[in-house]
Length: 256
Image (cartoon, rainbow, N blue to C red; front, side, top):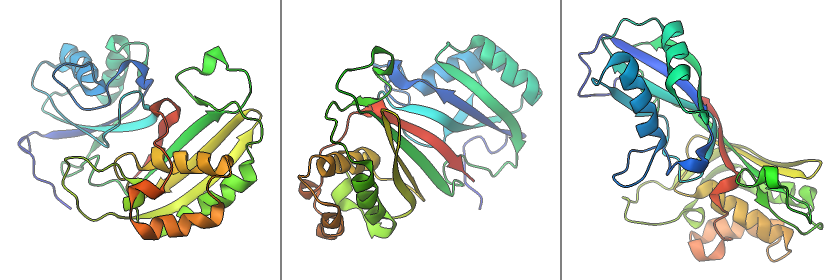
């Protein structure tokens, strides 16, 4: 599929895969009065190839959200080899951001529209005592009665194709098709870390964080696992759980 761009005349399309700690950023997209991942990346890129920059991201991420894998499309005429571009970017980027890979792609490649699936994880530190080294990287949930098997049973109800209106923050964005297909949804424990993993063909605004908040209500026995299908069917945000904080959320994998 071809996607129009103001820079389709460029003779190269480079896919750059990065990872970043989102703690110091107000999400991916450039903003007027806040530091974003995109702005920081573009500033580093400009030092290498100049100011003629056209980059597209694979997803919008919110303030404080992290990424283990984030893909960027760069349209350029600059001849720098991918290996050198990777090394140069890692030299200029701040320590909370790193380039994992660079590769030339067909000119029609778009990191967002050509994405088939995305996978997110949400980390919960489940211990009575907070861990200072997990601050900003996992939600601290102090109650020791968190039953990951009960949460996994609830998470299984997210699987399949549904209208996820109940799991979306509605704002001024245009409301379109609210159906998404979830291919993977599970909760696992490793020591004191409980991780919710969800993979889908796309996600609505705050969808994963609301899914997580609903699972926390299951942990508190305020919602039962078998209540999830009816919450989905109601298509009403007020029936789902709260929006979990951004700190535990990671864009984990982008699948093309």
